[in-house]
Length: 148
Image 1: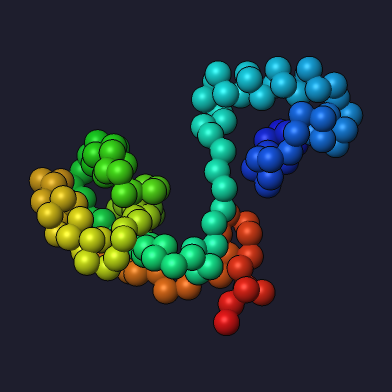
Image 2: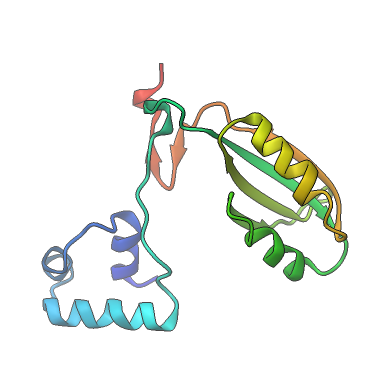
């Protein structure tokens, strides 16, 4: 992968000046390359990694395994369209086809989403919900030193 993309994936807050110095290029070249990546859809956005354990009322995260009838892409598009779905992946598994990472205010909200919206889709055969209790590492950032 392009070194510029690797640097941005590790830290989206690098400035053009910092990236130019690290890659021995001009700021103008870096800016143009980033704009090209955005235009081509390679760079989809940037994000901030939040340690939710440091917040009160941060909500809950769940990992949902979804078994579907053939038509994975169509079902994945529908699942991805829900606001509380953070990510959706096609999985190579004998027991499920899609994995969805879901956020909710509480366990009841996520459970309700699964029961009333996800499980009612015609293409969904079954689901298994796993609630995240502790995040130890996320997007390459370790929270282990912060664990109680």
